[in-house]
Length: 506
Ligand code: AHR
View 1 (cartoon, helix red, strand yellow):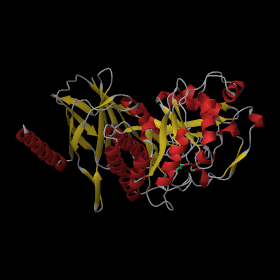
View 2 (cartoon, helix red, strand yellow):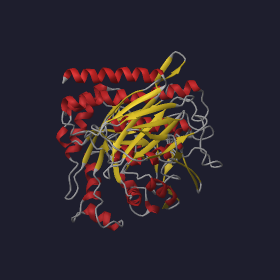
View 3 (tube, rainbow, N blue to C red):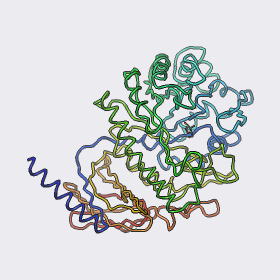
View 4 (cartoon, rainbow, N blue to C red):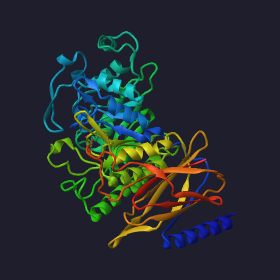
């Protein structure tokens, strides 16, 4: 048995090398039972920052229905709010009750702007109801108290008679919302309070003690996790927090082209900067693997989730806009980053149970940009639209060998992929070619997976700097893909340069 396995593996390696020399990917997809890809991997983040909430989701006195309809189309499963850094300065009582009587506060984190708090708890939860998604609220540890957090949860989730539940009713909401996903602070190593992991673990235990499961709602508590590759943070949390009452630990990682001081433009960049972005994006694989390995030692049955509740590319803000508002355009490069990262998350579905792209509308790697009453869908939006087929599907393990995308003296894997099988039995394969100049052939071997038809869609553009603008909103958009065909029992795909392809096999 072992000898046969070794022989098969050697044949796979041999074929892989020969195929890669010919600029061809050899990919094997097996129909063995993998974990379910949680729909929440396709989640989003909306901080009270810049024009994400005000202008993005909320104008005047109402929720923007054009934005809601667009997000419903991609089946947004979960939305995180109110931060981010802002969560640790947010006091929920400032933003309930009649809007003209709400407190005016200063958003000291993002631009020192005045907040009228017209968008608060009720408005956020109404937004989630309209979207048909789960709310994920980040509670305040940095400037809050366990009592404030406990009260907010009672206000949200208690169905009986209490002064706080009655206040909720008086403010227009009879039934409790049953908010389940609950973050205990945000970036507590930084803007959330500059804590050490051991200190935070103590705080987490204290705060979470008062996060009660009101009848009908079991909380899914998420501890504030590591900054990218700070593995010590995860180790300390796994060691010191009460894991029994914890659903997940978060982690934040942003794709960066240069340094935090010089992040570079979102729209005008060279191939060198394109390549740097891809190197940075691909680090997510290593970072997720290493955090998962630490969690595995304490939680071998993978009961706890790794929650990547902030990710995406972070560039300089658009020239002429308020730098603290983090408004950036979104290019074909961003679409490739989104697709690659989602492939990584899919392939780690055993541990990554939620992820939230930063940040939905008008901030960082946004899905939607708005300009007064106009709205446009970014290339990143289209990736989420194509990839929604993976939500709640069963991951199919893949093995592949890819040629490299060579840039100067450096190289990265040109192609990445993931595959899943949905409840109706359809197989979906998502393929990304990062090489901006070379098309690549993919031969997919599917042992034990008979299929009759293949169809798909492709997202590509002639330049990686291509963007959608209010004048030209459909420059980057998906098209029907005709480059995949059945060849015997195999599938053969001609992947265009710089493209995202999602195929359905039936
Ligand atoms: O997404 C912008 C900011 O990035 C968030 O507020 C914070 O959590 C992170 O540092």
